[in-house]
Length: 196
Image (tube, helix red, strand yellow):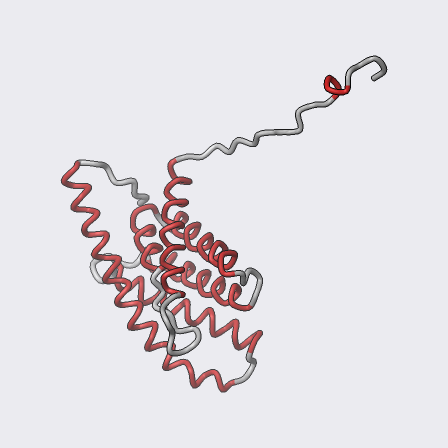
């Protein structure tokens, strides 16, 4: 280093990391952003009872499930839970684990529900089943971790009614969006990127 100027001995500390993305990554990012926006909107709506929420983000999960398959829907749902917890500052807090448990059990149920005959089971049925699974996942975490008392069983009818109502409404909304989307794709002759 003797005789060498100080400027010549300094290397550029900046480095660039390039991430290669594909069309599926872009779909996941866009749909996760929409789901996160609905989560923010949902948190602004007053709730008559803690834990009773309309689950608006589940509409996006249902649409993604129908268009792109279960794996993409799982990515969107789980990323929405993590991003939402970071946004609201409750990452790794009890609320995060409640949301995560509900999302995981909902995805588990949807993995089987999507194989049911489409003649009798559609978006509304999937939405109701996912809503019940979400509530069940949260109740399991509450009972096993937060409130290990049998008294929480008295809340089951309230949460079940909310799951039925909101699950039905969200399913109808998702079905309407999917119907409009199919008309748009047919009119423009744009192929749908759907997984079997």
